[in-house]
Amino acid sequence: MYLLGISGGIAAYKSAELARIFVRQGEEVQVIMTPGAAKFITPLTFQTLTGRPALIDQFWVSEGEKVRHVELAEAAAVMIVAPATANTLGKMAHGIADNLLTTVYLAAQCPVVLVPSMNERMYRHPAVQDNLERLRRHGCHIMEPASGELACGAYGKGRMPEPQEIADFVRAVLREKDFRGVRALVTAGPTREPLDPVRFISNPSSGLMGYAIARALVERGAEVVLVSGPTSLRCPAGAKLVPVTTALEMYAAVMEHFESCQLVIKAAAVADYRPAAAAEQKLKKEASERVLKLLPNPDILQELGRRKGGRILVGFAMETERAVEHAREKLQRKNLDLIVVNDLTVPGAGFAVSTNQVCIIDRQGRAEELPLMPKEILAHRILDRLRPLLP
Ligand code: CTP
Image (cartoon, rainbow, N blue to C red; front, side, top):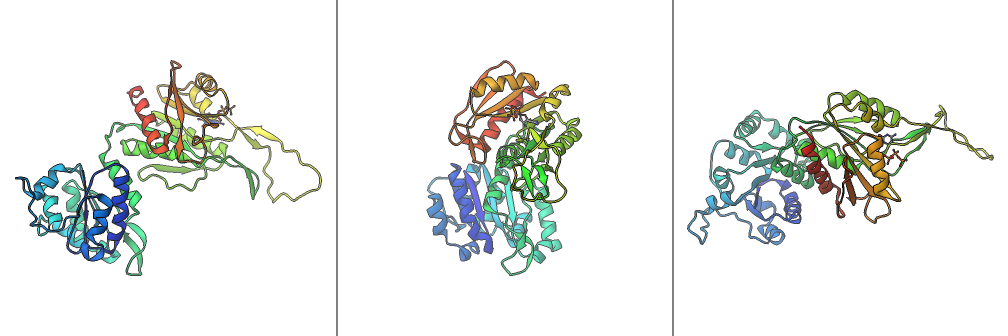
């Protein structure tokens, strides 16, 4: 069960969405509110979303023999306090148990995630910073507030991060760190090959698969370098982003970071060709036809296969026919350990969608067909397959 603690700040309204996300993930959610929180949002909102009454009253006695706050604390897989106000943080840091939320906190032995949210000046006050430091020492996982417009009209640091980011953070805290000590290089997104300053050749890759893999690796404790072509995605917190545009830039960035990594996952959709020359000025329209001369780009993965040493190499392939057969051939040619192939003709698989349906092929030629699933879940399935290959 997830315990979701809500203290009295204006960001409490965003916690309704957070509760919804947890419920959608299949978690049982028990909300505990401070009396102050109930002034910002009603318990009924949470009861409706979670199917359980939101608890406020510290002296509510349960039917069983156990004391209510101990019972709640024992049942919790994780306790999240979002928003965590300066007042609630202060009480938690000093062991004050004057409401149900702070009382349950003291009894809790599960991981605790705190999401501070307040005015920037309050956040920066040494009293609050000292309390956060103290809570960190007590083992709490503290999420950095976001910067932006605050409820008081000012701009600054103190905003509660978006509910989805909080949910991601919680998941990362709970995940087994089975990639700790592994340094991984992930490539993602398309490359762009310029024709002139305003035009380029590219492909519809959104970067979703590569970013999901980078995020999954970070969650499982790996150190991650993410070499990414242009995308609109947020770099997963904790990964080092190396932005590139062209295939040649990606080649240079990959070669620079390759040596220090034990694992390389190449999810990028690299352009196989680039225009022989990129015009310095914008090309003007002409009545006659134009012929475009293209030069081959280096195959980054194939080059890595040559320099592989003891590293684990994973490639991706997109195919429109005889997917498994082509992928097996690519795995051999590029000296890979695994290749993840998707058949672009399957609905819901491939470019710029949030799901994928793939087949994972290993060095022995074994092919494992996976069902259609969200890319985030698929990322973990791929890592599950990879883990035994690493030392
Ligand atoms: N790849 C790469 N460098 C390239 C082209 C591809 O590193 N210049 C990598 C991709 O990141 C991917 C794998 O190779 O992991 C397979 O890419 P794909 O385009 O399917 O394979 P190609 O070898 O280019 O074969 P083809 O386009 O002929 O199917």
